[in-house]
Length: 371
Image (cartoon, rainbow, N blue to C red; front, side, top):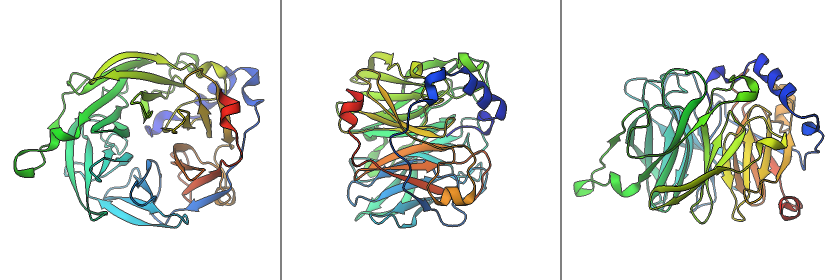
């Protein structure tokens, strides 16, 4: 998830030559076994979450650049795809651009609507809630307005964490500031059950903006102007934030909504990755993540900084290669039943088919690799 000026041929070559010689000597642990091909007109797949009630994967499809509504799709246990819910447009921009999504403890689905990626950076991004009745989506409502570029979204208990990829609507000089919002679901419950939206203050001044950091992208001279991206949560509530441009994951310890400590987990020095995009934390605490620039997926152990390359493909695959499961600028991952689902956002050439790659993780001993 990122603006279109992220990737250029120049920045990619700079990145490749900046990496250590051993960076590409590591053999991938697996390769995609198949592709899930999305319906016609559904492009730029990104955020994914598992519906805890059904086991279905819900997929956000922002169709970036297109005017009009956007769809959430459902991927069932047999990997069949169907439409799940249509998100209405922003009344001012005429677009909906869903990225990060997650179910809350109330059974409703929470969505980061990144209007910046949709083309309007002027604090138009939002957080939406898709109301479910009897397990079915019935309507959506606006919870938060005023965000610049809402991106990854995860929920822990009643707390919603949303990445703010850039606090300034302008493309600023590096280093750039980004961070994370935290909201309590209870804040939106007004009198007589009416939802009360929140409008946040800009430039990181809002009380909900609990954590910020700088991205320098020093080894590529600031060509990757992307900060906070994917977010994930361990089972103890530890927050993990992708620092896209600096190829790092930040571990954030929280107590009662306050940041107690933060640190890089130390994966950039491995030379195995070129960016950190969407991520998920598995029950064992390992972090699975997409590398958009490197067109790869990896896994890391935040406890010791060990990292392993799961799969990697060349960029700009042809149609047949994509139908066989090859990545096409992967941006998000999702774990279900021993398989890793990888969304191919494909912001570079926007060619069909648009796909989700599937990797079977059975037989891979992550403990021996990462401990």
